[in-house]
Amino acid sequence: AQKITQTQPGMFVQEKEAVTLDCTYDTSDPSYGLFWYKQPSSGEMIFLIYQGSYDQQNATEGRYSLNFQKARKSANLVISASQLGDSAMYFCAMSVNAGGTSYGKLTFGQGTILTVHP
Amino acid sequence: DVKVTQSSRYLVKRTGEKVFLECVQDMDHENMFWYRQDPGLGLRLIYFSYDVKMKEKGDIPEGYSVSREKKERFSLILESASTNQTSMYLCASSPRLAWRNEQFFGPGTRLTVL
Image (cartoon, rainbow over all chains, first blue to last red; front, top):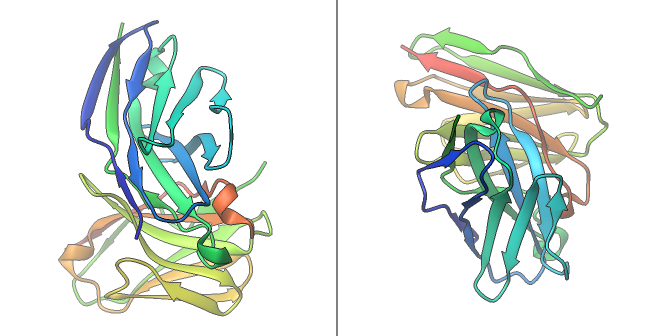
């Protein structure tokens, strides 16, 4: 079974500063993908970034980067130059290959609420 | 623009009622999913479908059933709604090689069972 743990229920950051949201995972499958989603107060889930277990380099998408440490089983999200619009709930999630039988089911963490102060 | 739509944003039902939540995607995706979201628990998978008429239980299927008669449509059914099914319900879809691809989510349905 897969497990995702987000240990920070809430985080605060000053506008224009960087913030790291923690995520640790557990799986015995060697083929897996790690995802981060943002959920604003309106409720929609917005995909931010993806890291594959075989990817050699850390994923980056604009101001978002994923600090992937495979040996430590961590996949922390780094947001640089925080903006007021970054205030939202952030979810870390994982999907495994499971020999092609998982169909991309996602296992989610509990989420971290990020508040950006002006 | 890719899209997943859900039939209602807000729904209020009575205990014991049969409830239908509808989800439609226009991306020709093979896989569709139903999650429920509760504070402190994140999102949990209720059911998913990898093809028309094919379905599999997720982590919390009790009290729910699903139907997928057409590729673009995936319905979640609460056979007899109970107050502990008050929650936010999110539908998602993804292409076949899904473990390497993001899921696309609908806007969610906030269901209240009185």
